Image 1 (cartoon, rainbow, N blue to C red):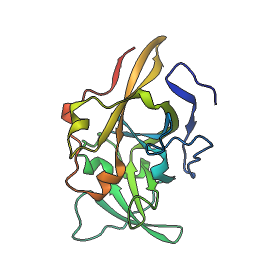
Image 2: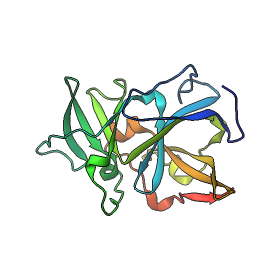
Image 3: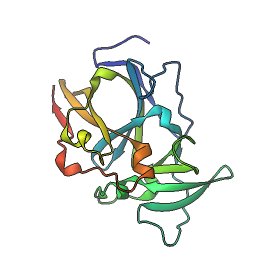
Image 4: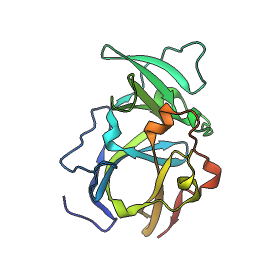
Length: 200
């Protein structure tokens, strides 16, 4: 792939209801590579990302069977090609306000790799936008929330975008999805972060 001027390699790959392609670039966060491959997704108005190598596939919303006596963020279970898969409502887990008019039926489910949890698990998000490769140097780990032991934030990625003929940056919150789904003490305090669009 040829690098572009956005601090990332190649073009974002569209993600729909299909298995995520990990490609030839070995860019996992733990790989020691100079690049990082992430899956970008939306929760409300905020842009998030997780390590591509923690993702098995992305599927459309399926009817979820609720479970009794479980935390509020455990949405329930689905039958995914014969495999019972637990679904975590990531918006509920992170205490992010649901947008007016938003419905579960428009959501997407990111199915996590089997290495993340002991059982089949997926996270429900508002939308999945792309798979993108960034230079590792593009991940800013200097925010105070990153340094906290109980934070789920790995870093902030400043993604260059074009809006109305001007350059701007979109901030992606890179989260440690393994810690977030396996350790209830881990949190993400959105009030301490300045996210959204910033000037280039």
